[in-house]
Length: 376
Length: 262
Image 1 (cartoon, rainbow over the protein chains, first blue to last red):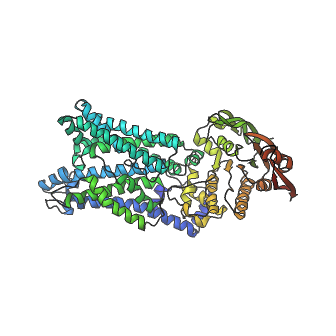
Image 2 (image 1 turned 90 degrees about the horizontal axis):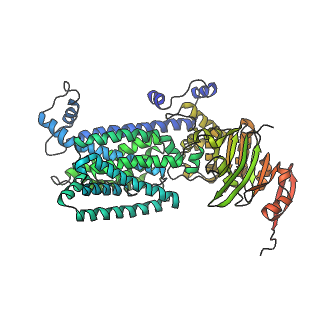
């Protein structure tokens, strides 16, 4: 508790009267509030611990038997080889086959979770997510264009990501413009998202129709795949983009809290609502484009993870953003683990599994959720 | 005379439809001033122009002779707070966190104990401490109206703007809200400017009243000089009886004036 207080609620000293009361008795409500703050922080730390635990468990699943301790040893051996030893085979399977897929899942889930969370806040729309607004479809289309245009051979992954970003951004700006002109009601935005989705999917399919075998292969490799497409080679770009985007989004936590109260209230508290909205949509477009490039379209995580987090910890984005990310990662890697092993050796693609596993869980939360959500 | 808030030549039109037409006024410190006027007279728009929620095409706003129109939004928020007419929360947020947002112009990312103490103080002042952990969407109308008011108070701006704070409230809650705001103006020496529909409430609680019609100020001054049968007839097109009760004019609308129009 002491560490928690000093880290998150460091106050100025002085201000005698309030300090004196602080030192004295707290009212029941103040105690309840302290408890709420503790639960909120505990929840974020707990789901993070769960993510680490689940990683170890999922590594053990597969044809080669690996125990949970061995899984962690294999991971830690890279950093402290003098303390952790494992067989070479185990190490290879963990580092080259099983762990990369989990890392890919975590990054995709985390990225989609935080994107959904901040998009919902700036659009004040519980149905906003990279998928429902058609931004993943735009990114997907950018990939197809890049593949057909054939510039990939010159520019490598950066060109494809760049292209996906441009088209994802186009979709975002379309959504923002629509929200500005017609009002950002849930119905408007989701209808626009569906339209954008169909439009870009149709054009992507049209491109496929005219594509050569080589181009088709490129399209499929980039983005139409699932977590199997993830490798250490392309993780670097993803990591760099994460390391840029995540702190930027976190730095806007307070503004996002205030944006959910409406543009007028936000402006009166000193937040430039329009600028913040565009800033957030640009950042999320970049993140979504990168994820779609490497992992394909994964529909369900970005919409649901933020709601799951909000049900437990409320609306403070300083906690909500990381919690949405970690929950997204948890949902995605668990769903993927089930898909990998349910009817092994056949692997069910990640996107399908997240929906099959996630939707019933989401329904359960809807029915049992303690905190009132928008639909109750 | 000392001037806290001054509006100069505020002109605003929406889709080339004029809403405010050269509005000028000056307000002394620690006063509660209300803007009254019929629907569409520009009360709310004037309040929004002052807080730069909408930008007037012409004119400037001065607080302590400093031009608000040249400040960053964050700086404006240190001088001016705003209580919107209605607040809808899409996502569940507890009352405490909603009010804490008002500290945003003053705090860093981490927040501090001091900010929380200020929120508790305001919660007690408004007598809603027991609601601190309740979800905003589950409150009654009267309770909901207090939350943005509290948020504006923790913002600690010297001038507070309120847009019809008594809308949709029963008499008890109307008086409660007005009393709290009047007390705050007295004790903290704040200046409050509110758009108000109810002339009798305005008359009871205001130090000064500004009466508007079609984007222009037609009368301004203390309640007895503004709330008169003549003004109400010309501005509201209503014949009204005005009686003085406890030194304040009270009005009773009697019938519409239909000057020639069917």
